[in-house]
Image (cartoon, rainbow, N blue to C red):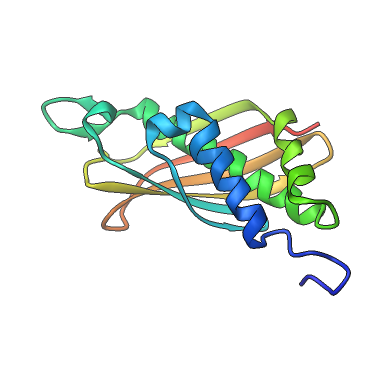
Length: 159
């Protein structure tokens, strides 16, 4: 819990900058229509709405597996940024977001469990370990009905 001398790493200014970065400045996330819905230390949630540009199979109107993979990867990165922001709560929001420039995906695994058909999809990620050089995450993609559609696991370089 933040003290009088330690700022809240998830204050309104930080969340606004984080949303701008992930939803607008990362052009591919903007193409996906990724919206950040929740951020906590080492956790992130987001949502994408189904659109014709994201259809993988025209006959079934299901979400393309590449869109799922990219969205899960983005959520994993967002969860890591949130964990790093909590670790460096004494810095300004801009300084905390500078850690993002060093973040890169090393390994990504996605298991597609069910066809992703629906009006929107929930994405969530949790940091399993944040080391000094590498971080590991686990992610999920759920349908609008809450059904688990895909899971992911990833490793990221953070140094």
